[in-house]
Each structure stands twice: as C-alpha cells, then as structure tokens.
Length: 388
Image (cartoon, rainbow, N blue to C red; front, side, top):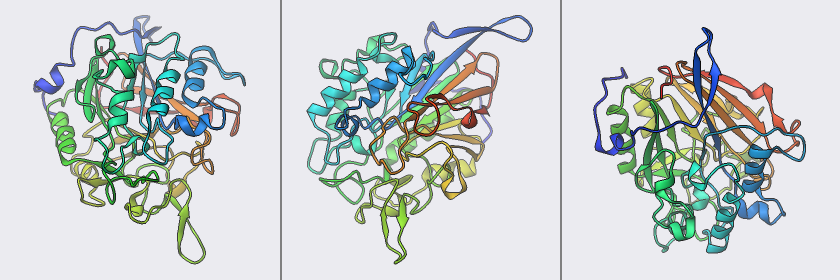
C-alpha cells in the first residue's frame, strides 16, 4: 500500500502534542547531535507462575534493566516499555491477589514511573465465562488510568498520552505511531477461555480490526508500530498451524509451547486466530498481503522459547509483506517451562535514521551468560527516518 498524505483523525491526532523526548543524545556522522529513543519490548511475565517458584519475573527484569543483574547482566537505558501481555500466570481466570502482586512488582522501578509501561491484555489475562468483560486487566493493569486506586496508573502522568480504550488505543512518539490491541480471549469457548486453562488461540473483534485499518489509512506519513499479544500466522518462530504442540507417534497432539485445548481452536494456538467468532480469519494477513508495507513493525509474544529456536523455519524476528515481526516473549522462567527462556528486546531509534537496532537481553544465564546476546541482535529498516 502506497503511503498517502497525512489525514487528521480525532482518534489519533489527539495523541500528537508538544512533548519532550527523554532520550539519549548521540553524535552523528557530521558532528551533529542526534537524539535516540529506546523502546524496551517485553512480555509474558506470568507473575503468579514464577512467584510460586520464589521468582519475581517482572520485578527482576525491571531491576536488571535499571541496575544490572546478579549474574553479571549490565543495566540498560530505556525510555518507555511495551509489555505485550500475559502478566497473569493463572490457569483459571486471574484474581485480585495476583493483580495486587503485578502492581507491587511494577513498583520495583526506581528510575521509571508506572506510566512509562504501556500494556495490553494477553490470553492469560482474560476473564472467564460469566465474568465481567476483562475485569482483571481493566482493574489492575488499566492502560487508560480509569482505576488508578488499584492500578496506580495516572493517565496525566503518561510521557506519551494514550487515546482510545483499554481494548485498543494509540499513542505517539514523534512520527512513531503505536497501535495497541488487547487479546479478546474472554467469555468462554470456543473463542474465549474456559474456567480452566489458557486457551491460547488469539482473538480480536471486527471493531478492533477496522480501527487498526482506519488508523493506518489516516496516518500514512507515520512509522506505524502495532502490538498484540499473538503474532500473525506463519510470521515468526512456531506461529504456524498446530505448531504450538508436539505430535506424538500415534498422531495425537500434546502440549508443548502452548496448552492443548481441543475446544478452543487448537490449530491456531500459536497465532491470532479469531476475528469475532470466525476461525482462522487472517484478516490482518490478508490486508498486509494486499497492501505491502502497510505498517512497519508488529510486536507480539505468546510463544516462549530460546532466541535460537527456528520451529517452522522461522526465527523470532522476520520480515513478511514488508513488515518487521518481532516476538518479545518472555520474562517468565517457569510458565510453559519446557520451552521458556527469560529474555526481552531493546529497540533503539535514532533521529534522522530509518535503521533500528534490535538487541536481545537474556535475563538469566540458562542459554548464555546473562545480558546482551549478540547472536540474536538485528538491524531492521522502517519506512522513513525517525523524527521527533
């Protein structure tokens, strides 16, 4: 899709204000000063799961980023963090006790505010059958600051204000436009989770898809970054049909990257599978295939594995339809422990450049020494130079 001229939109334009970017200044090739913006992309903390093993998955990662790790990992600077969902580790629907723990662990940040973290809902954050829609995420995570008493999120303290709802919202950092969409894996099978189990097949509403598509069309001069808990079909490691499981010799499937739930669209357990109640809809994939370069980056998580895994012939960072797909999972060590390895990504945008550095940080020394894993570092290109 050829990028059109910018069209103002009340949904998006409200995000654009005069803001002071807190990034680092670097010296350019001709001696000019260039500002950098650093995005910490992470997800899948599964706080409750790790806490049962006496590990603070979210708080540990925050402390490591600010002060370094106990196993030698260095600290690193970041301006805002994008967490791509699954703060909860519950197999039933999340509860208030885990919500309080999530808020407590966000409080580990000493150099950053709670409002520097931008969040979306993953499948484990979803409400169960008969419960109020996504009540736990809206109460305890609360990207819009509607329940400050519980979440400690004050919308007025956001460095980059959000516009929209808990389900879908946008914000701007210069000419970077973030489109953030929560998983709608709620309300009961087959689209939503049951009373027990994560029910991993991803879901969005048609209303959210239309919002995403319209936002792209109305902001064609922006560098567009989309975030959802799940990756799209056949984009990154283990994101193809049935790739969430291990196939036994008798042809049956058992849990591996994801839990196997026959009533919940298991074919699509590794990717964004549902649009309303339509299975394997591929609405985003079809749009991007028809309009290459429609967006610049798609952030997701959901599938936890080591940075060298290439299940399905794909790695954690791939390009398709002119879009850079980045799997940011996971901060947990014990949730889906057969494959899980705690790691995250740091993206560095430099003013005046269309090149983005993507680094991989290992939060434990299971796979390699804690800290930067150079083998997984990439440089990706976006549609236009970053400008503030």
